[in-house]
Image (tube, rainbow, N blue to C red; front, side, top):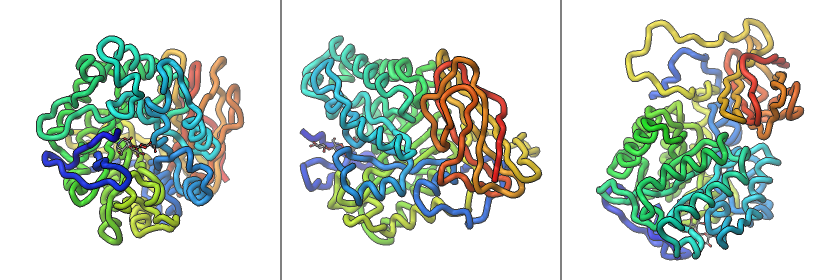
Length: 473
Ligand code: G2I
């Protein structure tokens, strides 16, 4: 049975859903001013993924496994997107239909497709009151708690190293003005179920970013305040949380809030990434396009807004198709909303990717912060930043072009003995251990003079740090 979800802040309103009675669920970038000169819009991308990558972001979509045999669908997916979220295939009912028996066939189709086409994967969702299998719906207390922990452990372990970010907990707060947790069988196992879910996910896949994801939290309201307080509390107590997802299902009853960017920013200031995770905006024409443009600009203005995912490709793929809320029409043609998104992504040309440090809360210093100077001549430099934990690592590599810019680049480094790479994004590695050369992928070979792009890889063992050899052509 579909869960009825309320929308709007404080005064839930409802719109009929075509297939069922489901109601819609649901800067100051301040790239601290100094780092890199903005390139000309001549380098602007021509697809959503490439243009987002030029801004250090991803652009993703929800994908349904059964549509991967639809040529139009796959054509758009492969051309435009560099992140995918399985729309239903990783949910509890899909992955553990019988207790203790896991089925990953449909989810694997999406993950394989993503890997084969250079896309990353957002995992959705490990613990949620909705779309539970019948056996879990009938559990309570310790039995349910143990089942949740086992479920998270099994699913996150199975996909270990393959997931960019997990929606660990989805939609755990109530609508309306109370700021309370949503009542559910999971909530009734004890208020600590959310932190237990996050700790369990971290233990199972330490390389994945762990997100809390919700709707009606897109502006400042009682519900988002409650999520904010939870994130603040988790941060202060060392509960592992890396990101907050803002679903962003909008329509006339639940429009893009005027404080959307400010709300993203206040969460980012807590020291988490923010992501727009299920964007769709009902409407058409210029109004819809303008709203999409606003959302994209808000993300670009928040340095820790790492990417945007739309909840489907064509209007006909949407969970609320009658509202025509997506970027492509039912025939796969680009809508005005598509153009607005692409234009917003391309505005200002290529800029640095988001920093991972929150913007300063005090007046910035008058002297610029130290940056890696671009090479003075042709060529490029590569600097590594390492996130190491017991047994594994993630390395981010920043490739900075010299005065001539690049058309193509490669970065060569030697992994410490015993280390091997399990997953690479935004570059193509020559191998998994020893000396490895990473070459640019299609969309990031071109780096404007003095600007940079980033790629990353995840592995087991001890990761590399420092600098690497960079060659440009
Ligand atoms: O409701 C929109 C989204 C709100 N946030 C969490 C998301 O996970 C949620 O996605 C939607 C999917 O887009 C729908 O496709 O979640 C729905 C379920 O809550 C999904 O609908 C379900 C139908 O209810 C089922 O009848 C159907 O079997 O999709 C299933 C697979 O097509």
